[in-house]
Image (cartoon, rainbow, N blue to C red; front, side, top):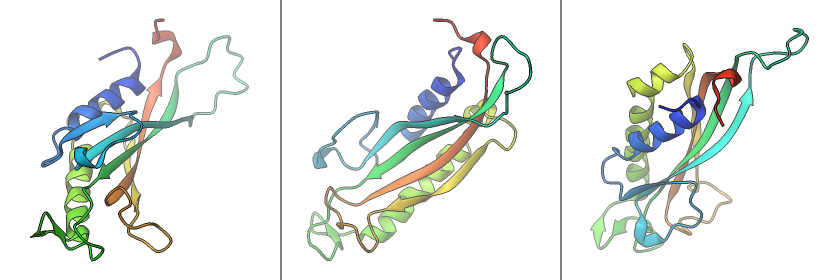
Length: 164
């Protein structure tokens, strides 16, 4: 644990995501991944925003405040053999059920991790949904199928605890 709750949450997420079955690796803030690395999880730091109102309190230093961290977590799967997206290496493995299985594994891993729960405010950990390339208007499987998860982590930020 560091003195930066945001970094602690992101570091723990990387460890937790590393335990998702059948994933070849978890990369944080990495640019381009190669198809040969899939299935892989990409963890991007995302956004952080203040939730607590701190204006008009006559303080000289920022008081502790609740912030929301919204990292981006993507699962990248290998492309299927044909445009029908039903086989992988000649073995039946359709994309839809594969994405659904990873969805369950990732959500369960993140939402049930005791350390992440402890680092968040009460009721401060939520799953906000996902987006995928399996929809109209997207190139289906350009890299391979992917799914991007949205979670929110509310935690207390206390500037007085930061050490440069």
